Image 1: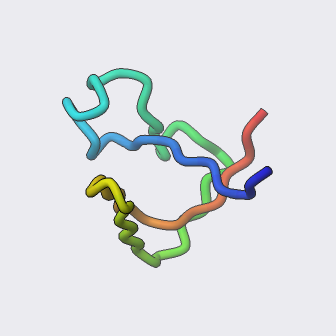
Image 2: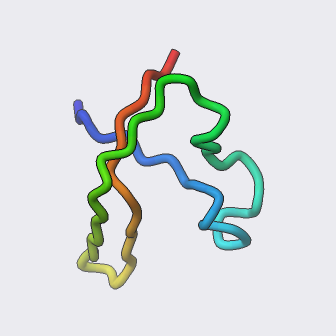
Amino acid sequence: GSGDFWIPGPACGNLCGGTHVFNPNASSTYVPWDKDFFLSYINGASVNGTFANDTVD
């Protein structure tokens, strides 16, 4: 298993279909780390965002 759980946020926009994105303002347990990340994969895809913690039920 993995401790990482990727969830697209509002900035993903149309690339993510514009629906079912995470809204940190709607979470009472969201805690941003104030640290950004960027990852690139061997197939040329990439992902970037801000590290954070949240509780998922």
